[in-house]
Every structure is written in structure tokens, then in C-alpha cells.
Image (cartoon, rainbow, N blue to C red):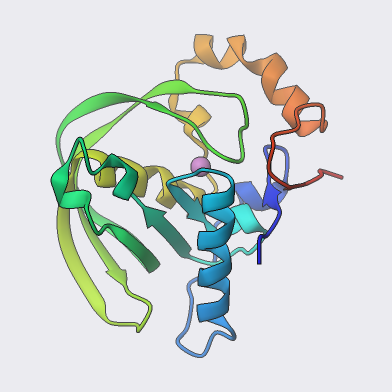
Length: 184
Ligand code: NI
């Protein structure tokens, strides 16, 4: 089932999301719905607050980047309670977009490498070191679980320049071609 997406101005995007316990109801169904929602909106990552659930769940499908990074061939995964244990390497700029910020793209600086800890769909723990696209996407999606958006990481001048666009999204004047939850 395709779920409607929360957009800038919705307070759920500014909340710290809750840890998920193994008895969380209907998690496999929610994960399946999040994939479907992400594909419909042509995203490569989606965090639960973007489908109006304040829980620490992310889905990522980085396989469209396989041409640039062959190790992403099968990189389609759900991440429960993910954490970044450490950052490494220089900060790099990458042009980011977000389904909750339709029509906005900005260069965002983030560390190139991360060590990440997460539970998979079966609640098995993994600790892995990533760089490249998956390190980028995970940092962006994990920000969502902590109430942050990529526009919090751009310069004050850039932020000023997109104020009009942000207000238009918040007021429901920007309508993407996927279903959204209108702000109150
Ligand atoms: Ni996003």
C-alpha cells in the first residue's frame, strides 16, 4: 500500500523518533509499504517519520547507483534502530534532495565514511563500515529519526534563499506528483 508522505512544516519531521521493540505490531507490513511508497515517489531512502510514524525505521534501496558503485548491486535493506558509531574521513559535498522537501536540492557536506550499527528485519544486529553513496543516504535518513532535515546543514545564506520555497511547501502550495499529508 502506498502511504502519503509528510512534508516540511509537519511537526513529526522535527521530533526524535522512538526505538522499535521486537514486539512492534505489523512491522513487516509497514516495511513493505515503505518500499512501495519510496519506489512510487522515486526515492532511494525513506524514514518512518516521512510516512507519519515516529519510530526508528529506515528503508534504503541504493541499487540505482550500482553503475557508480558496483558494491551497491544488492543494497536494498530495512534498518531498525540504526546508529552511527563513528565518522571518518573528510567532509564531502553531495547534492541532496528529500521527498519531504519537494523541489529543493542543495549541496550538503557530510563525512565520507561511517561505522553503522543496526538491526535487520529479523532483529539481528550488524556493525558495518560504509563509504560513498550508502554512507551519504544513511546519514540523511538517520537525520530524519533525530528530527533533522538536510536544510539544517546548509549555509545561512543558502537557507535564506530557499525560504520562499520552504514556506510554499509548508502551506501546501507545492504539490509533488506523489501523495502527501497536507499540513494543518
Ligand atoms: Ni529525506
